[in-house]
Length: 367
Image 1 (cartoon, helix red, strand yellow):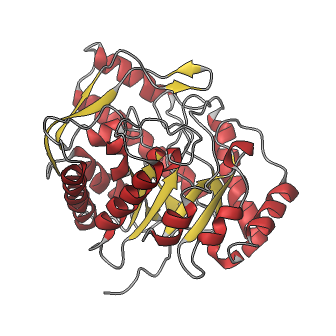
Image 2 (cartoon, rainbow, N blue to C red):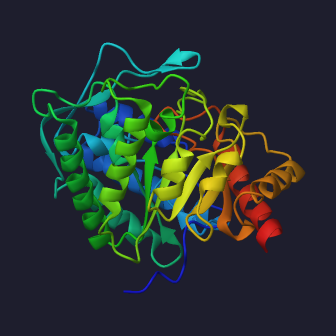
């Protein structure tokens, strides 16, 4: 089996989610109130996905997504459709800088396995047909390590964390196989959990394990999932410190995870947040193997619409190239524009202008 001719990630790439148009917000509300059917909501979402696919191609992106338009949250919509997992409304949302998120989470209620009728597989098939051969259809899903967040694991069902980890690995192997068979060749695992292992105080943790034990477990799970992936399937991971209505959940550099995860995680690329001082410096990139995964520098912010200074971006890429060869680098926003249906605080016009700006600057840097 040969590698795909077009090697992702691309010089100008993006994390995945896009601002939901007002038409989708209204359709979701109408569906909840019984004014339209599930089928009518799906059709409206499809029409809007067709529009944003065209727009992504128009601004010059080689990889396009469905904007996560069929989801409410970047992670729960996928996870709650796994066997043994359910969505529910907890007493509190997650604490972000300046606010608490909308209350919604997932929890384990049985043995975990992949659901062959998972709706995201059908959604991807429809999305890929929309894209055709005009671009690479990129699929985003939450990382398997998201299932280690506090409050999700059921100790009655999984008293042993290793049994839990093994079932998570098998579940995600099933997911990767299903997406591949549906035609996916570019898959991104979104991971707030691993990024949180860098924070001064680890958020979302109730395991009682040490930081070092959790980092080791996260690597074993990630690599266990990828162990038998098809050679021509590109898999990247995106490390995020929280993205909710332009707010963030925690801070911390990548220094604590770099010696283990940057050095040994068997992905084809890392999407990393580098849009502000919360992210720390580029020094942890020295652990990325030379000739190994591509590093997508999230030196543009998705949290506001103003465009970054071009010369500053070029200088930052040049600085990162001290640790990773320039040919191993790419650029993107640090996160999606709408990790939840609420979206970040900027306009759709600003979103598209920023994505085009990234494409234009990438051409100036790499030709």
